[in-house]
Length: 363
Image (tube, rainbow, N blue to C red; front, side, top):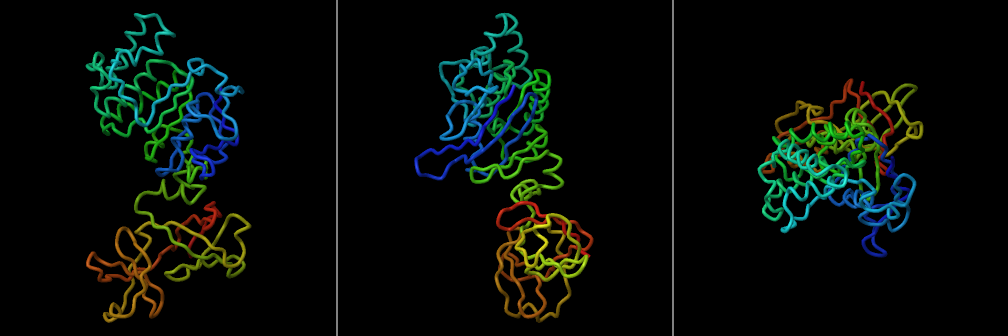
């Protein structure tokens, strides 16, 4: 059982930038895959193509080797939870849960199973309620329940928990994992939340501007992200991206040129990067900045604005050795701080393409 996209693209309007661009992807039996990216990166469009809701403008969408539109909607065995489930006023929660399952089970068994699932996700008391009467979180749980009651081969979930509080999410997470394992179903989860992706999935795809820029295991994404955009998403909100240049400075020595001074160290990785003055980017945590002593009058010298650092103004003192100054809310610099990479392993990325070049360890 496989869902496959082959060089698939989709544009909402002719001659417009594709929402999904030249994506090739395979979802095999039993896989749990997350699609992570910022708003507008193409995640929802991608899952809609895989669910057979929209046809790719170019390329192919295949289900077990057949064009997905050549397979009847029910025969696809795809359980889909949309980002914004429709609140169908004439349909009860019970009807929603039972609709696909009644074709697979006897009536009494289906009703008992639906009641059990509804109770487990906290909507047992809502079975006779109209979908139009539900809150956003209740509606999402009802559509998740429909997938759990049915046993589809593929579970395609588009931001399925966005309106559900964390307490209930902690209940639903293991239910989704358990159901996928028991039914040997494939799960494709669209989410903004890297931590949710790590909990529910084993493999992560990172999208940017309609393309998949990274495809790796959760462990790799957390420890050694293969793309700068993936690193920024999985590294936490306090990571700061710094641009610089990398150059060899000896047989075993390399220099990382940064706006805050040069750092000497070792570099291992892509041989294409082992040339002089390669434009690179890297991410650092706030604790990788250290304060440096300076004369009291230094704060009165000319400063050059250099952007923002953790929501505060950032300035460079250009009068002597480069140093980073952090301004308070009233705009007065309180620094300076300098980059400290001593004995620290830092991933170095291609500044233009974003790919991982290798690791730099400061001396």
